[in-house]
Image 1 (cartoon, helix red, strand yellow):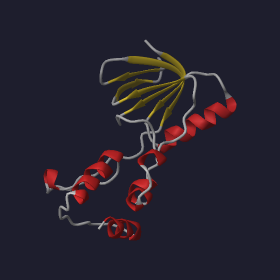
Image 2 (tube, one colour):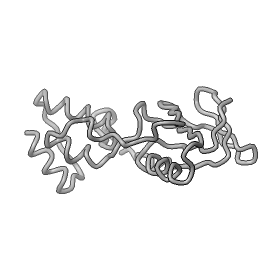
Image 3 (cartoon, rainbow, N blue to C red):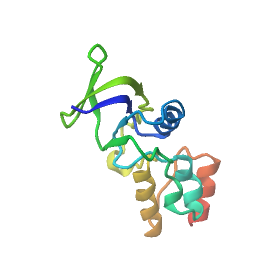
Length: 157
């Protein structure tokens, strides 16, 4: 059972910022991260802005501590026992911790229609899916896109 002085549930920008903060006060304490994404934390704003304008994909990655960090990616925390200071993920792995941060962000609210024909645009995988469609010159409509979404799609056309 892995034990971490610091355990973070969530793999987004907040988790990455928390790791930076931890390193400012504790340069050596082990940090564990449980994240549902299959990739390490990244900056989300470039997904709807700079990547569409030609910036390289490697510009999105958050700087993470070089030592004392273990990423448990593509996993979901399914049980939390604060009294025992333990967490279990969807693979059955149990973790213990001294300090826990829940940085899970929000969950997507899906429309009651459309099924797989709707692309919900929040993640790197969503960007890659939509980018592939634009490169194949497929047609699609954008609903709810602000000014940055409109600029991005104009640049990709």
